[in-house]
Length: 306
Image 1 (cartoon, rainbow, N blue to C red):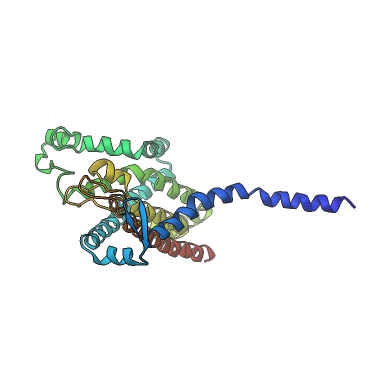
Image 2: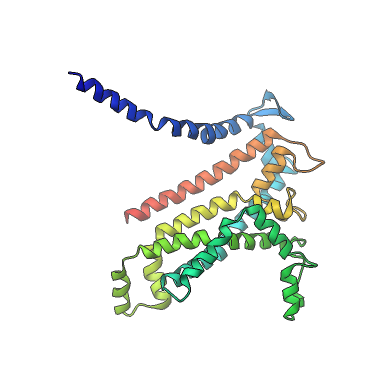
């Protein structure tokens, strides 16, 4: 007679265990999103909330100068960030993972060496590379001059044409280790029988990679693409550490996250915080990242079913 109530109590107790995790998720993930959307619907004076103005902050973001121009400029930089990271960072990561998968000499050392930068703070990485790329005493220009390539030595971070690309390459150096590990996990999950059977059929070289390997690690490719997209649209620390909150020189390294920081918190001495506009920008960034990530996840499910 007493066993049934005890069993019910036990079931209720089990249902209570996820509550702390749910409370943390609601407090630190859901509440800030709802709060940002709520803030974007109000007019602000400094950090003081004034009248409800509906979607006016969103309209100003897309139509009022200089915010609309800065938004378009930063969005283009984020897209370039994503494209170059996909080509350079993930291209190199796949090649290195494939070499390690082939068990070349020193493959274990390669795996550790390329993941080491990931252990450093992004701010530290930015500071170190800012010294390396210094036009006067930086290691890169000094090395180019030593080997007779003075014509290639330049003001990497001072020229609007090279500043953003330089930062993206630094980010590729920093992030290649994580992509390498994901690709390597995918390669090691391929059954060896498939590889051996393909070799017996005469498949090798680039045909082996494009016809056998890449289709079998499609889920890892999509996962790396999603992570790279999110990282590209959250690009802040490295840009801030190397070029400051103004995306110098002349906003040539500005990204949406840096633009958000400058707008919401006032990133320079002559600019004041615009909390409502900054919140509207944060909501737009969230919508872009969520929509594209959901699209990629749907693609992942479709691939996993085939």
